[in-house]
Length: 285
Length: 285
Image 1 (tube, rainbow over the protein chains, first blue to last red):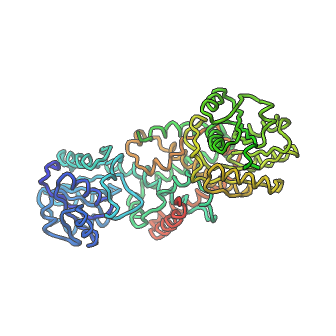
Image 2: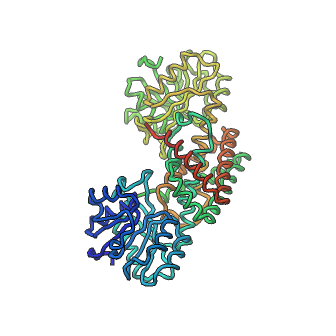
Image 3: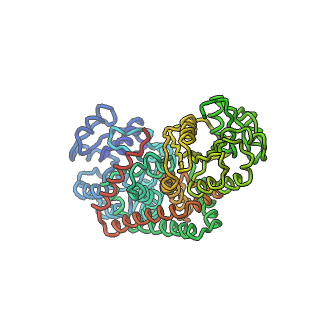
C-alpha cells in the first residue's frame, strides 16, 4: 500500500520523531497532514513545507481521509486517543506508532480497535538530546534500527507495509520482534543504559568533577539528559522487564566487585577479554 | 626549565601516549630520544621523525644525557625500572610520568629516588581504543585534562615545569590535585566507568543483541574494549578507592530500582531532572 503515493498519511504528535518522519515521507511525494497540540508546531511545519496541512485539535476530515496514521505520542496519551477518536478512522486505514515500549500498548489497542482498522506497532530506535519539530531531520534514521512488533492479529500485508515504511524512512536495519522480545531487548539496550547514566550522574555529590572529566565519563552520561516525563512513563510501562535487566546488571557488577576485593586478576582479565571481544560486534561499519 | 629547547627529553615507553608526547614536543624543537622494548617501534619513530634517536634496551648515554625523562610504563614496571636504573640519571634531572593511578607509585618512587633527581607525577587524561606509537597523534590532548599530582617533597620550580609541560602538550585544562584526590577522582570518572562498561558488555548472554542496538548502548560500551593487562593492574592499584566508588554507584542504582518497584514516579522524575541539570555542566565548551 505504502508505495502508492496517492495515499494520504496523517502524523499524530509532531515532535522530533513525527517531524522527521514527515520530512522523509514528504520527499517521496505523499500527502502529509499532522495533528499536534501546539498550533505553532503546525504553523512551523507548513511554513517549512514539512507537512501539507494540519490542525492543533481533533480534525474529523484529516483523520477520516488518512490511509496511514502514525502515532508519535506518549504511551498513555496514545491509548486514550484511540479510545476516544477511533470512530473517525476511515474504514481500512492502517495505524502504526513509534512508541518505545510495546506489550502494554499493543494488546490494549488491538483489543479495543474497530475490526475494519489494523494496528501494526513499530519502534524507530532513533533520537536526539533535543526535541520538537524544529529539530527534526530527514537524516535521523540513517544507521539506526527499526523494529516492527506484529502480533497474531496482524495480516501479512499490513506487516509488509510497515516494514516497507521503515525502509522508506531510511533505517539501515529493519527487523521484526514479538512485543515481548522487543520489551526485553529495549529494557536491556535502552532503558537499562538510561538507568545507568542517570545513576552515574547523580551518585556523586562532589563538586567540580566536571573539571577533571575525560571522554569516558562524557560517553557514559550523554543520555543522562533525559525527558523525565516520558522516560518515567516508559520505565513504569516496562517495569517487570527493566527490573530483570537491572538485577542482571547488578549481579554481574557485583561479581566484578568481588573479584577486585579478592584481587582475582585472572578473573578480571577474563571478563575484560570477553568484553573486548563482544564489543567488536557492536562497531558500526 | 622546559621552555629551554636546548634541553634533552627522554621518553621511556614509546606507545600511544609516549609517541603522542614525542610528536608534540618534537615540533617545539626539543631533542627527543626514546627507550622502549620493541626495536620496531624505535625504527618506526625514527623513520617518521617522531624521535631523534632511541634504543630497545637500557642505553646509558641516552639516560645520562636526559634533562627531562617521561615514563609511560605500566605502574609496576615503572617502579622496577627506577629501582634498577636510577644510578644512570644525570644529576638534576627531572622525572615525570603518565601513570593512571598515583598514590601507589608516587610515594614509593619518591622514597627511593636519589636526592639529586626529582619526580613530579602527572596524569594526562587522554587515550584511544587503539595502542602503539603507530597510532600516536599530536592532536590527542586537545580538549583533554592534564593533572599534576605534587607532594610535599616537590619543589615549586619542578611543579611549575610539569604544569608548563602539560600546557606545551596542548592540554585544554591543566590542574593539580593531591595523589589522594587524584585517585578518588579517577576511581569515579575513569575506573568506575570502565567497570560499568565491561559489566554491561558481559552481563547479557543473549545472542544477536547487536542487531537491535542504538547509540545509547554503543556510547556506554565504547570503552568496553579494554587492555586487560593494564586495566586489571590499575584497578588493583586503586582497589580501596574504586571499591568505594562501586559501592556509591550500586547504592544509588538500587535507590532507583526501589523507586521503580514502588512506581514512585515523582522520585524517578526528580532524579532524572537532577541528572539532566548536572549533565549540562559536562558539555565541552
